Image (cartoon, rainbow, N blue to C red; front, top):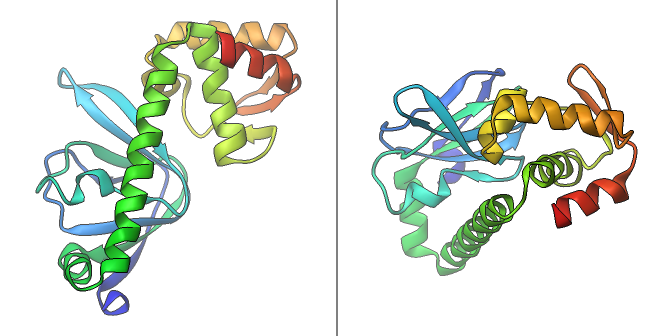
Length: 202
């Protein structure tokens, strides 16, 4: 059933996968790449809710509770998505308890992770938030101390609720303190322990 209804789609950086308000008719699984999940506030301002990495279900938090997307999703790197008709997933959920339980566990994990991330960010000062997001990309997404930031300074600010100029200033401070090295979009963590302390206690 899954194989008959699935469709694999390639998206380039900047392409929108789904927009806020559109009907949910597909179950999306990210095979490779990175996506941002965001809401539009006051007509034009974006608030990034989270970053989706490979092997994540996209839109799972709304698929069973909403008929329309309450957020938008866009590629921030070239990405490949496996799209399955939502009706097919619902039929399998109704007939396969083990499959349904797997989805419930994944749904609970995604909810817990989203809540923990938002709470952690809200409790930190500006330096702590910036350090936290650098470590998230290094440890959770790229698993490397050296990587290219896939989002702009403005988008970092949207993700951790900071003004763009503050993000730029604090990244510059980290560079001057030789905690990180910055070359364009490239970041190399030079002092991992110091960065962790700032993220933990900032």
